[in-house]
Amino acid sequence: MAESTLTVGMDVHRDTIAVAVLRDGAHEPDLENTLPNDPRKIERFFQSLAARGGRVTSCYEASACGFVLKRLLDERGIACEVVAPSLIPHRPGDRRKTDRRDALNLARLYRAGQLTAIRVPSDAEERVRGAVRCRETLMREVHRSRQYILKHLLARGFVYRDSGNWTKRHGEWLRKLRLEGQDQEVLETHMALLDYKLTLLAKADAGIEALSRMEPYRGPVARLRCLKGIDTLSAMTLVCEIGDVLRFDSARRLMGYVGLTVSEYSSGQRQRYGGITKAGSSRVRRILVEAAWLYRFPPRLSADMRKRMADQPPELIAHCMRAQERLHRRFGKLLQRKEKAVAVTAVARELAGFVWAAMHDDPQMWRTHDR
Image (cartoon, rainbow, N blue to C red; front, side, top):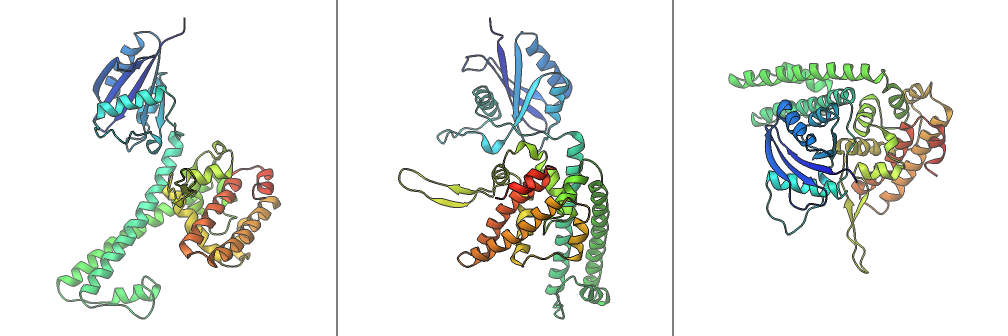
């Protein structure tokens, strides 16, 4: 007699977890409950399920709550997968949404094999990824402080016109500027806050630089830095956000994962194509688009690029030079009939293929993937 299975769908929130338990072949839940998001209560609940006999499997969708629950259940020997929220099927006519209904829907779909599990990073990977994302947050904070300063000065009639903002000369002008009364106090407060954020940003950059020279990041980062438009910080972002590149069996899979493939709305005899899907990691997509802009310039080897390539295999160097030639040629052809934004997105999509190959340490990938 086959072993019975209990399928548990969980809708996880900060304070509570709604659970729905389905038996094999049953449409209605065997048990529905709302648990406190507390490790002891969760462990006790799954122990009670295991006491019924049979196998227990569970799932929940990825959210801001992270992978704490997944790791807890793994430690207790309970099968658990984290599923991609954007790939959960939804019925258009279903207009009721509650935590319990969401949990039951997850249990039904998971039992039917209609959910897509995501890769869960290790604790070490998640810590490094957190450091890289923190640096990105600091960049936004620096930009925000600079905007506060410029808006404050504009409202008081002070506009710097001698050169671009936030150059060395602009900084000297700001330091010498003297406003009246409280306006000067506000300016000094904003400037002090900006200096503090820049100090934190420099510290974050140094930390990420140190991490990039450690295993397992040293090899992939060194290879990615041979591609035009990608340096240490962008390479670390790509490595941390993409994770294990071996889970993508082709470059096209990676392009789809980062949302750079074209969306399609075709039916019957009509074929319609839209913009890119924008699925997956927006951070990876942003890095690739920013790097793609540099391929509008002709291929060349700068002194800095030669230094990056110094200790790398000849096959990798040839791969990166092919990327420069091919993507520059592609950029030029697209600009003849497309807008710049469309052209750079298409180049970023092809750049993802070169990134996919460079993240491997197999010379065969560098020689053949782009042919």
